[in-house]
Length: 333
Image (cartoon, rainbow, N blue to C red; front, side, top):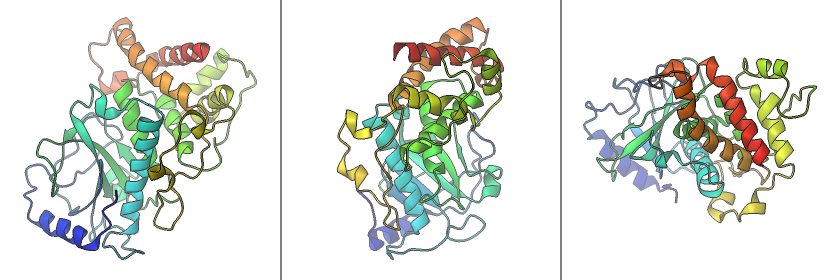
């Protein structure tokens, strides 16, 4: 499953050196979080690749985006590169193959995509952020053994991110699930639910919960007004409490046996990528995304959107439609 053989990586490196990259850009310069525009095709120095299909990680060994060269197993690939690949691979396995979340590879928005490209870049290249996921697929960068027709989902992760202690790669992959499911991108939904998703690979189940005085559903108007102004912290006010309400046990293996290739996958330090089997509310969140995929068409008609521009995707007019869809799924649950 993992290409850890040193000679294999060296062959990949030599082959990459001869690939003509000027037409498509071997690595992209990323300009804004979730942009609907294609990443800039300027050349950069990401001349190395590591593949854990369908995940392809591009990185540099020198220059401003140079990755930490630590290579504990001496296989020719920096540990930080392999760890990012493992986390993204595990996130897709958990959400799309085990928990049946909508697979972005199957979405109309990402039509034809069959791989995930992760560029490891200096934080200055991604506006000082830890990571970015993009809302469009693009022609895949050429790699040895790749297909010229490959299309890629695109993520950028800062070189400072250590996947052993940072869930950014999985968080950004979850954004791809959201983008493939619905055009809604209001931040309390987009970032709040993605923050909830981080507990899937983490230990100890849910994070903090900021329960409002009204613990019933739907929440009171003033609570919802507060929620709609939130971003990541919306996980504490809505998504985590909801997850615990509908799934207090949160045992992954209750619904399905977890495959050995996921439960035995380890980071470079020997720690497990899937920390434990606790993950509350996955079924509810999956159904919410499916419901939002049905709701956004109706919403665009009622609000008079001629197309889902970036501004319309995050328009505050969407807030109540999203919330009502969540409550509808909760009632069914």
